Each structure stands twice: as C-alpha cells, then as structure tokens.
Amino acid sequence: MPTTRVRSVALPFACLACLLLATEAEGATYTITTLAEDAIANGNCTLREALLTASTDSTNDLCIGDVGPDTIVLEAVGTYELDDGSISSAARQLTVRGDADQPQSAYVVDLGGVQRFFGVHDAELTLENLTLANGFANPRGGALLVEDSDLTMRRVTISSSQSAEGGAVAFLAQGTQQLDLAEVTLSANRAVADQAFGAGIYVSLVNGGSVRIIQTRLLDNRIEAASGSFSRAGGGLYIQASGAASFELRHLELARNVIDAPSFSSGAGAWILVGSTAGFELEDAVFDANELAVAAGTNGAAALSLDLTAPSATVRRLRLLRNLGGPGKEQATIVARGSTQAVVSDLLAGNGNGTGVFLATTSGTACNLVAGNLTVAGHPDSGLRLGQSGCPLRIENSVLFGNATSSGADLDVFFGSPEISAETLDGVDPLFVDAASGDFRLASGSVAIDAGDSSFASVSPFDAAHGSRVVGSDVDLGALERPTIFAEGFERADLYAWAGFVSD
Image (cartoon, rainbow, N blue to C red; front, side, top):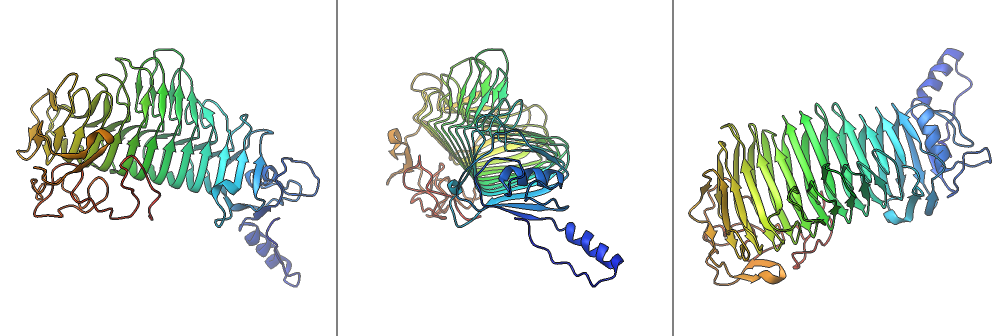
C-alpha cells in the first residue's frame, strides 16, 4: 500500500497547494503482499501494478500514483510471476527490495522466459535483496536493460536469463552514470547469437561513467554461437569503455563460464577493454575453470582478456586456475597501451591446458608495465609469454616452473627485449607443496623463500591469497608467501575455492 499522508485542511488554500506539491514530490512506498500477477482493478497492489505506477506516476488499482522517488517493498515471501509484458521507465527513481533479514531466495521474480524485469532510461534504479530468474529479451539485457541511468544492486541474484548482449544485465551509458554492484551473483545466464557478448553482464561506457563491482560472483554463464565469423567475448563479464571512465573491480569469483562458438572467442571469464582517461583497479579475483569450448586458432585468452589504456592501472592478487582454451591459448592476456602505467602483482596461474599468461606492451614509449611476484606453473605450452614493443616491460620476483611439457618454455619472449630481474626463477624447481593438485605454496627448503627484493615497485602488502607479504627476512618469490596467512578470512586452504564474501 502507498505510504499514508495526512494533510491539514485548516491551512489557507495556497499553502495547502504548496504542501500537496511538496508531499507528492516525496514519492511513495508500495508494499506488495500478494504474489499474484495482474494489472486489473481488483482491490490489490501487485508487483506489476507497482512497477507500472512507478514508471508513469499514474494510479493502478490500489497502487496510488505519486511524483517522486518510489520504493517497492516485497513483503510476500515466495515467487512473484511477472510474465504478462515488459515494463520500461524513463526519468524516474525507483528502489525495489526484499527484507534484508531474509535470504535473496525468499523473494524470487520469475520472468517466465518471455520478458525482462525492467528497462530504464535516464533514471536511477536500485535493487536490494531479491532474485530475478528466467528473463528473456533481445538484443540486450535479458533481465535488466539500463541505458544512460544509474544502477545499484545489493545482495541480488540474477539467473537463467538470456539475450544476445548481457544475458542477465546490459548497462550502457554515454556520460557520468554509475554502475555499483555489491554481493551480486549472476549465474547460468546465456548470451545466444552469432555475435554475442557478456552472458553475465555487458557494460558499454562512452565518454565517462564509473563501474564498481565488488564481492560479486559470475558463475556458469554461457555464450552460445552456432556459426559465423563474428567475435564472442566475456562469458561472465564484458566491459568496453572510453572517455573518463573509472573502474573498481574487487573480490570477484568468475568460475565455469563458457564460450561455445566455432571461432573468434575470448575471455570466457572476463573480457575488458579500457580506453579511458581515468583509473583502473582489478584485485582479489579468482578465475577458475572457465572454458573456450572449441579450440580455434582465432581464439584469444581462455579466462581473462584485459586491454588497458587507462593512465593508471593496478592488477593485484589474481588466481587463474584450470582455465581451458586449448593448445597455445593463454589463461590470461594483459596488454598495456598508450600512456598506461600498469602494475601487475601477486598473480598465480596454474594448470591450464595451453599457455599460462601473456603480458605485452605496444609501440611507443609512454606506457609501462611492471609485473612482480608471479607464479606460472603447470601448463603444457609456454608458461609466461612476453611481448615488448617500444614501451618498457619488466618482470620481478617471479617463479616460472613446470610448464612447457609439450612445447615452448617456462619463459617465452615472443618479441622485444623485456627486462627480467635477476631474482626471478626461470625453470628452477621452487618446491611447490603439491602443484599437481593446485597447491602452489612454497614447501620448506624452497630456494624461493626470502629470495626476492622487497624494494621493487611491484611488491604489495599481501600475496595472492591475501596473506601478509615479507613474513621473513625479505619477500618470497612468486605469488604466495610462506607461510600463507589469510589476512581477511575469506579464503580456505583449498586454492580452488572461495569461502565467501569479505566486508567492504
């Protein structure tokens, strides 16, 4: 029901009118106590009626129209059917939320495989503590289409939704709009088309904007393309940006996302192209068992494709494990261009079925890429592949071992003359605890313990598992310090697992 308002009739007419206008501008709260799906005058306020009212400010049944920011509260626990037609809104502020004391699964909006939940333009949309399922729309935004608008999601799950771009969410902005996600799960969504992007989420920023995605899971999302010489990218996450766009991507899990296409596939976990004049930060991310289902020479990186032009770029504490791209294909590719000053640190890449990691700089002298405390191990092809074209590229305090069992080398200089610090172990056994099982910690007696140089620019406060750095007399080589101490309590001993979200 709408929020009750009490208006005094004793005031002069002019003042009463002022009060009416001021009150109306406050907006309304619609508390939904029924799971029914209807938009007829039958004495209730359904979710559909509340969405229609918030979109138009006009009354629908007992959902009373009111100008201003609106809030829809899902009070009835259960599944809300919403499949009688799509709803869109422009120039509105809307919050839809379930009770924070209940799990997200207590409030499920089932879109029936025939429509998206909402489409907004020039608006502000906030979703809190609910689940959206079975959305469908083309060409973008299977569950949500957000254009030139702000989108905030807290404790939201979106699953089993489909589009060509943005199986779950499509976010497109041409200005200062903000995308802000925390404790969000995007799972089992699909992008289906000969040219498809972002089965989990599709983000396109032109001339600015900001993206903050933290404590978020992208799981089991899938791009499917039967044929065509088109590109397919970002099985979990797709981002393309230009202008003064800024990025904060932290505490992410991208697991078991797949691109199933005959060719031109890249980034089954994430594909990110940042041609930006603002900063970029990616840290504390796990890429596990993402896959390019079809091996093809035209494919790119299996788990992560990251192309940076932002002036300041930091990539810290990434774990790339068991991502599958086929022979010669890297688990991750990171390229620095333009005037980018990029630092990559505490990156663990293990047990893929092709090459480990490709790091590269492009022509010119303005950019710079420094990568330190890398562990790259357990790949049948080359471990760390490097390409320097003009801009400096330097590797520090790293361990490269147990790769190239079929072809290549632990350290493969593909082109140019990158600088390799004397401390880096290339082909020297560091005594991993159990590399075959994915445990790349340093065993007692390892030559990598305290063998690094903590004065290097790439040395950060924590290792790849968020344990403290420089536990002994100096920093250890590689991505994991011995002994590994889980500083924030969000990891388990199993390096393939993610135990839960951390506090922001």
